[in-house]
Amino acid sequence: MDNFAAGNYNEKRKHPRVRQNLEIIYRRWENIGDNESECRVSKCVETVDISISGIQILTNEKLKKGELLKLEINLPNEEVPLTTFGVVEWVKENEFKKGYFNTGINFVLIDLDHIYLIQKIINKE
Picture 1: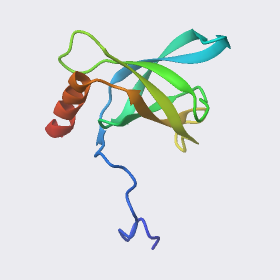
Picture 2 (picture 1 turned 90 degrees about the horizontal axis):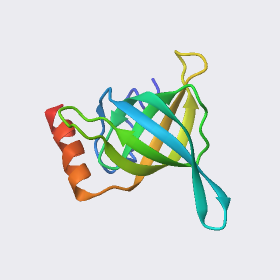
Picture 3 (picture 1 turned 180 degrees about the vertical axis):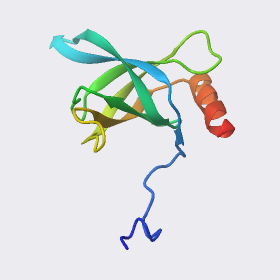
């Protein structure tokens, strides 16, 4: 039995994550000159899980660790998407869906109202 299965592991996350299937649009941001950035084509994907500090998505595009993304997250019972920025922390090939990647993103700019909305989702689970 491995350490994980035996319960002998250290959880690194500071905030609890819940499995949540939400629609999210992400846009990749790239530097194009002196202090300018450009928003590349957006992609609509689904989330795997979410916390007040980050989100995991499943995408058919391999993003790069450290890449900055603009995120628009459609939350249940909200008319306007939650818009924030995040940095890709890790990317792993999905073992069940060939050509897809699980991607962990940490929020880098999120306001208190958005934290409250995410916390409502977490508390329902």
